[in-house]
Length: 198
Picture (tube, rainbow, N blue to C red):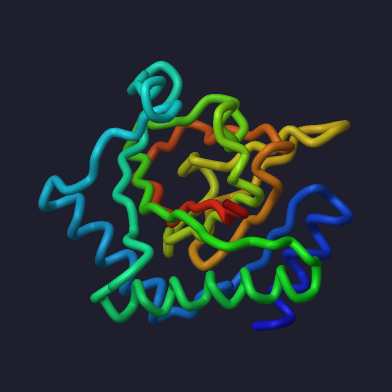
């Protein structure tokens, strides 16, 4: 796993983003996918919004994904707990090797149904500088070209599409890299989150 952490960090340093395949194993992929599909079936996913606190709003012209937050404490589902442990280990590794001073995180399931998208944005709130790094782990086991839902990164001199392939992880600075999720033509699933220093 340390090699995967290093690949994410090296990519961030050299290219402004890191990407690594097989960040999670097949069993974790299957269990997390089963969980988000259960939430969908039971209508436990909620429309995602933009902004926070008094400035929070839902706007389907900007984003149309459905989400459910993962608890950061007392996770009862074994697979979710294993995923959280993985994120916590990555935070510890970043603090040890990159002196990042990260102390917390927030993660949610994200489901983009057919026709859903998220327009160009950055991940840090104007009123809250706590988010330092964004991390996305895809749960799309059978994604193929033409399914849509790619992550479009706005790099300094170009744009780059990243396919949301199952078990793939993407990592970048929350306040620097503009990005969007292109229109999905089938259900597109992920766990998306932010590593925070306060």
